[in-house]
Length: 85
Image 1 (tube, one colour):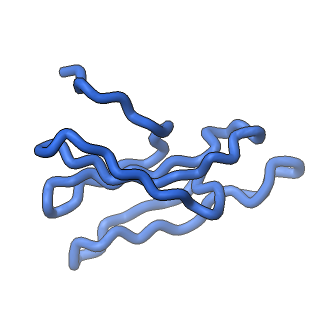
Image 2: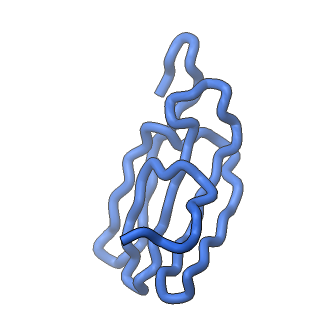
């Protein structure tokens, strides 16, 4: 199925939340020149995507859903030359 809306960011990690929305975390995508870091919440029922800027590159992060339903995101990328993830 193709969605009728375009994703405004390049998803790196996704998590389906208990309320049916989808948490999307984006990063550089291993492109050192990409500096538009964002997270988003996709609501498939409403057909909407809400974005929020991030202050760091979340590329190469680890994400888990805790037993109480909250997402825990750890890590990201600090720099590329030399690489420090």
